Image 1 (cartoon, rainbow, N blue to C red):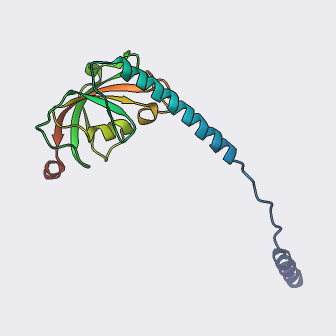
Image 2: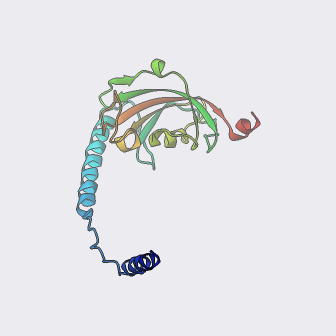
Image 3: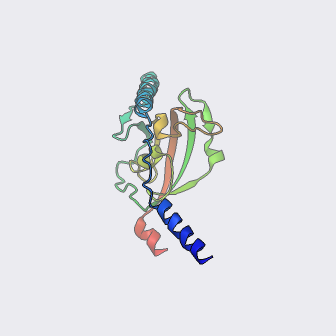
Length: 183
C-alpha cells in the first residue's frame, strides 16, 4: 500500500509537470462592423439634421440658436435681466411638453406635471442636461434635439427609435446648491 501511494504521487507529479499546449488566439473581426456602424450613424445624423433644418426654415416666427452641444433652440420667454443659470448640484423644477418634428404632441405638459432634476447628479436625456444650463429661472425655451441628444436607438412607448424631438421647457425654479446643502 505504501509503495502504491508513492507510485501514485510520482505518476501524478510527472503528469502535472507536462508543458501546456498553446492555444490559437481567437480572432474577432470588429473593424468592419465598427466602420459600418460609424457610416450608418453619419447617414442618420445627416438625415436628422436635414429634417431639423427644414423645420427651422419653415418656422419664420422664431430665431433659432445653435448650441455647441449639438442641438438648436429658441426662447419663448427670455429674461435678460436674470443672470443665474443652473450649475452642477443645483435642483431645477420644470415643466415640459414633447412633440415630434411635425408638431404631433407625444407627451402633454399637464400629463407630465412638474419635474425636478439635480443638475449633473441624475440621469436625464443629454439634450435637457445641456439645455438647462442655458436657461434662467422663469424662462421658457423650445429645443430641437436630434435623436442622439434625446432617446437615441431605444425610443420608448410613444417615441420611435432615432426620432428627433421638440421639447418646450419652462424652468420654474432653481434651488442653488448652497440652498440644497442647508436643507
